[in-house]
Each structure stands twice: as structure tokens, then as C-alpha cells.
Image (tube, rainbow, N blue to C red):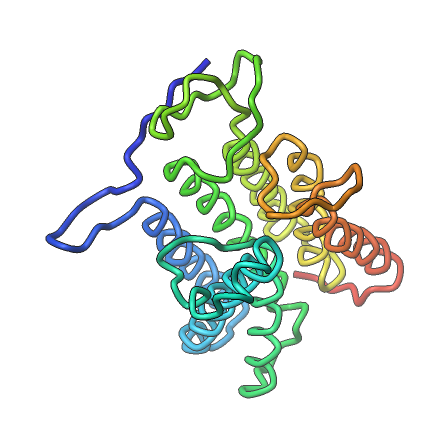
Length: 263
């Protein structure tokens, strides 16, 4: 059993409080930028495109994740108080919405700038650092003592003292962080070590691995939605199924009929 009483605030500068969640989020984007820069240079792409691309992805992630949380997990409250949606500093981001936001951001990026590479080529590169960003975000959730697991008697349970609790919970945040980090390693190996593969394979694997892991971890978490699905599945599981299944179908399709390239 592990007792956790970490302070979510890393540093205070006058009225400004710098939270660990924000630090992990920012560090993920910075590391992802350098990974992408390395990938672009290896392919002789213009690295100046990355500044625009990063802005699109950052905005898409934040807007998508915020709207996803408000409209999926607490729709009654936020539809009754729409201005509260803008108060992102109060917390509340959903990865499913963030995923849709990123996809729309990339679509707009291609629509506006028409880069000299395909969607799948860019997506395969992006998905490697994205898995790392997902890992760091869940570590930020752990620092915030949020996205909690259900109570457990298991030896690896965590007692969140900051919440005033005296009983252990499943470390759901760390379980997800570990699965996402393994996904990051797998995607990195596929990208850098497998020299012949179909375009889009890494993109498809990300969806299958990330949301497949979410499907199996969700039952160990406290339900985040303020309503019930009235099924054996949680809201998080139902949201994860189409992403995971879509990723699996795309993997099979690409392996059979995809455009294979040497990298």
C-alpha cells in the first residue's frame, strides 16, 4: 500500500501557481516537438512547418478535450451554464474529445497549408510523441489526485491523503500512464526499426493500443460521467470501443491493402 500526499502545485510566484499538470503537459509538447523535428530532418521536410503544426495541435487538443469533457461527462451542468465551459482553469479535459480535436486540427492544417506529405505520413510521425504526451498527462492527473480508481484491498493500492481519505484505491492514473508509455515504446520501435511498412500503420496502432488499454482500465476507475449508461460498460468504455475497434480494423486493412513504403 502506498500513501500519496503530493502537492499539485510545483511553484508559486506571487498570485501565479504553477501546477505539475501544466508542467507535464508542456514538457510533453516540447519533447514531442524535438522528436518531430528529428523526424522531419531525417525525411528532409521543412522544419518551419512544425511551428504552425504545433499551434494547430495544441489548440485542437485543448478545445477538443474541454468540449469533450463538458458535453460527454457533465452535459446537464454545462449546457445549463455554457459560460462555465470557458473556465478551463477549473479543470476538466477528456482524452476522447482531445483526440477528435487533434484530428480536426490536422485536417485544417492540410486544408490551409497543403504540405508536401500525406496525412498518414504525418500522422505516423505524430503518434509516437503523442503516446508520450498521454503518459505525462496521466502523471499530471496523479499529481492532482484526480481520475481516481475504485477502492481496493490490493497491495498496490494508493491512499490519497490530500483528499482526506484513509482507504486505498486502484492507481488508475499510473496504470494508464504505464500502458501509454509501453505504447510509446512500441510505436517508437515500429517507426525507427521497421524499415518497410504500410503508411498509417503507426496511426492505427496508436488508436488500437491506447483505447484498447483504456477499455480494460476503465472498470477500475470511478465513473467520470454524471449519468449511467445502464449497461455493463462505463461511459469511458463505450467511448473507447469505436476508437480501439477502428484502429484494429485499420491495422488489418493497411497490412493487407495499404501503401507499403521503405523508410
